[in-house]
Image 1 (cartoon, helix red, strand yellow):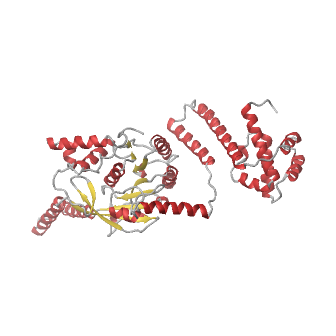
Image 2: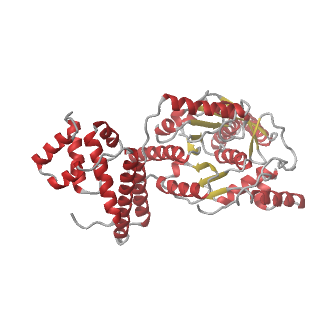
Image 3: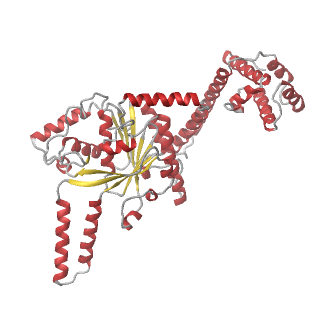
Length: 502
């Protein structure tokens, strides 16, 4: 055997000690087999010995020094000298520590190999940088998956953990809110808030207000001093901020976008922006994003900002998978990869992830236009992976569309008779009435899936001028008085807001 450095000598002795342990005690081999693979061993003779033991296990033969020695002599896979060194090694007691050392060394070797591969691949001019980044991300993630392993828990440990959680809940005063505050009392009641590791889907047809709804939700998370990350693939960060400021200041969005503000409104706006500067809000508004890029960015942010408690993707169908889309079938597979990736990431980071989703046009053809789980676009895996699925339904939107369609039909088929003119005038009057009615609009949040609770509809309301969803019990505002009060957003400290790529 060639001259070894100190590190290799140390690892040689660790591997010998572990192999000696399971050659003298077959029960040890079971523990090793659950964690290590052949290539986790550095030295070839040890890899060959481990392969022999694996074959003996498959053949249901004893795994001990005698049977292994017989195979070594028969197949001549390793030298008798190497085998005698192992047999002469004293069996170890702390098996878990030796397994951990061998696994850690194996992971480092895999990373070193990947680094060499990256160096070689970067010289390939035909390879796009995005493709290379995605390839690297996948390989690093694969290595991390190999390094992670879970074991069975005894019923005692599970009960201890369960009782500990129950005691925590009791200390909260039997509160209905256990996870992240959704901002809506009814939703908190039936979901207990968005829990760690959950994937929450918010689905609706276009223009129903999905983006506004999640912006209202995250304000409550920010109020608690926690950090929020937003991946906005559809809307620039500045447009998101316009909507947030309209909701916070009770200044109509149209006035805010035009800068049509009086001195009092400017003061309220300055107050709100100053308060938001103390909040941990991070926005990535790039128009393209793969599941690999999102995973990398969010992991990095969680490391840098441990207070990160919620992430939002707006919206899921604008994301890309790891491969290029070539057909509708491939797109279904891509969406499946994305939804599963989001669920896995939520569990890994122990935070809830909200993903907005479009629903199919089939909703518009039905008499009852409330979305159903089957309406989620492009993949049933979204329904499968999600812990909670919420649909947003606004009856007034469909009423306005219906009136517009009726008016358009009459205009496209003009007849010079008083009956049609009278009908057209009535439809226009009804349309104007619906558009200009008071600022309260009834809205439903439909809990279509709730892995840990009831499914039902929650009635809230939409405050039109300020682009804000509110609980039904909340008094409506007809003036421009600010909604910011003691205990509301801005009174709890935090990191600075960043509207820059993560």
